[in-house]
Length: 99
Image 1 (cartoon, rainbow, N blue to C red):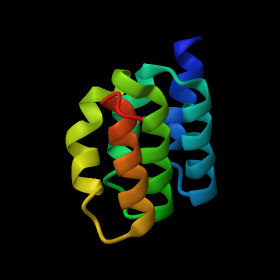
Image 2 (image 1 turned 120 degrees about the vertical axis):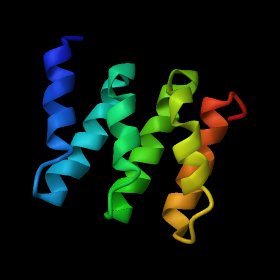
Image 3 (image 1 turned 120 degrees about the horizontal axis):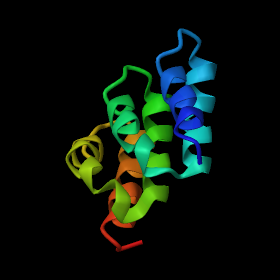
């Protein structure tokens, strides 16, 4: 996998169009390259709850390669928004090998 392809989608996470950001998360999940993990962790702090939940779901696919996301996902798993808390809890299970 060329790093430039990953970087293109990481850069799209900051695009002004929410749909472009969402599909960037989906594509990074599909590519499953651990180089995307730090950017997906950053997305967990965005204001867009749909995007945050999608990022948590994407991080689940990385399994133990996303260990650095555990603190952010632990915090997200305690939020009131059901989509975020559910996907964050799922991601934690997958990352910690409990899935």
